[in-house]
Image 1 (cartoon, rainbow, N blue to C red):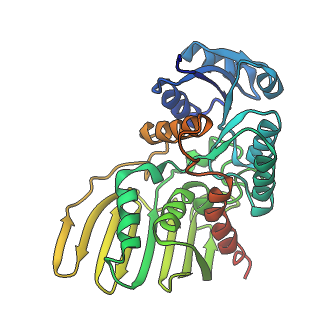
Image 2 (image 1 turned 45 degrees about the horizontal axis):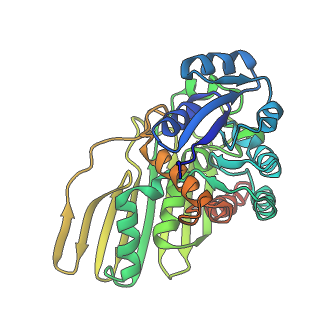
Length: 334
């Protein structure tokens, strides 16, 4: 039997869309066939670059029977409505993070997914990194002993032009917040995936430098369900930008994860891994990204459609980091 090729179309033609396009084009079972954007001229430019069809509207894209799946790469405030519409239209959906601006809207996506024959995956591509998988196995094996601390540091740099170049970044209406929900949600997701769920016992949210209404600096103290304590530090005004780090400390060992790579691992009296991880990722430049993990996540969706494996990050799983961020944001006016 011939292998089926799944036709993808992208909603939105900004910076993130190109990563989805490149990821799709790298897969044998996927083909990019179209793009839609609220600005049709932008869609045309993107379509010319990739040799695909520009749709005049999202509705036109969803009504095309040739489209099997859509990638939603629009500003965060539109994600929930557009994902629900895709699922109701029977289109498999790849949804950029965050899945919604609040858990109420996230729950609506979960409900739409349960009622639809289509599948949805929410981009959390760092979970596919081999060292992230290894880190989760190490924690779950108990090799670090009883966990005492789990700390997440996301000290990024975004120059003022990053926000001024867009009318939606750093706004509550379209971005849902700032450094934590936009830049920080991938780190929060990775931390919860490796260590388990947590709740904040204190948080401080403020705008330290940028001319935006949302936060560019956030600090939270966490209590994990497994008994560990921890902190989150997130910022977009930490020049020149530093690697995202997760530090996990237990009674029998410790592990440091830098940009998704294990930098240090000590178990008992043995130093298993030790070596600096070079500066990488988007800590200082949001246009820098490796698309290979996006490709792995889209391949997981295709495999799930074919019944080969379950969806790795479905709507319920993607709700976890959003829930914690929402709880941290509840301290905004305290």
